[in-house]
Image (cartoon, one colour):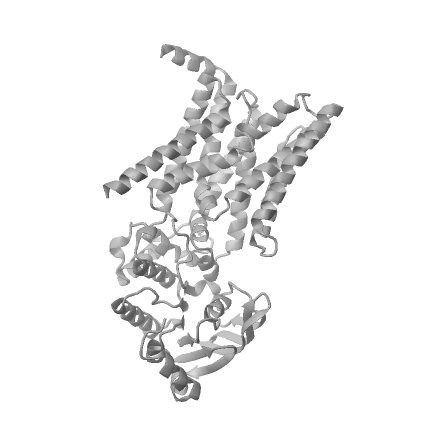
Length: 289
Length: 240
């Protein structure tokens, strides 16, 4: 036991570990807020598609050697979010087919670009393409890659996401619960859909460095699904999913330090465990009635 | 009593298939309009067009004069809401007050009181904290009506409001809508299969089929040929 403590104590001496904890908790907070909306509006696929787009954008950023990846990734992802939402509403092109097309296309192009760049030695590719791609998809294997600038970007973005969510909380509920009623009674639901999509894009981009683009959807959706098993009002579900998400991120980070496992997948594993626990709780509650 | 809503040469349909056409009518403030017609004649589609949820194929639907888009309540036909949505009754009824908020992010006390009054009026007060998805069909219908009432300041559109209600609840629902119209002066537009209720409560009738078959006051409708024919077929029993 004291072994574990001293190991943790040593780890938290390092600023990078503290950065990782801050960033991890902030990402967990932001990503859990919109989970319910994403699940109930059948937007989960958009979240997944966007993370692939973000991967493609990341590849382009790496190849061109721009110092700050965010400059490319953020606008590209936001624009894709808007476009995906448009096609989702368009009956002529099937929304899910469009998402599949864009996301797989972005993955393929991104991987190809990184390979070509590595062979020609351009950009900031390290020559070890497999490691590069792996860390972009599944998050950094170690959490030691965060710089203070990343932490600040993350803090600012989290403040923006949380305040947007709080300010528009009631409107997000109205639009999520019954969009046609909201629209019929004079609420500009298209605008709020757009807002939701943009916020999701922002969350995906800030979470990407940490947990990797393939695992972000899990971070967004699992806490919400777990909370929905047990809680019954919108507000309690959201509060519960925030708590679940924070706990899972915290324990995931600690475990990954101790067991030297990759951060992203450790956090997601914690989320999966909680999901099953909540499934059992809900089954027990139902039987108790 | 000015006009609130105008339909000019409206035709409705899906992707080029016309369901109904040549709709010309005006709804004035204080009216109680009942839209009747056979199944598939486009009644629900018309309601959606009036609300601006669906564009008409041709012609124009106009809200005019004193009613703003955020002063309208709407009771959708069935619960198109997803089945496993986690939301309490209170949260749903309150969301009907959303269109009063404008840019203000949160509900004020007045709106909370209004939501509470509506819940009391519809006798769903004991359910306040219950989860919507666990309620019976009739209870869900009341919750949605309470929400619609919160949103309705000048006009309310109801699409088959009594579906899934037992006879007692059906009567109460009609009485409630009637008092809303007579006492609170809210303009009512209702789609109904129930001809008895239509001729009992409405002030105006719109009968649609492939085209507009009749529009006018209830009294004129009951003496018209089409009206008498339709009442003899549809009336007498609750025809679903």
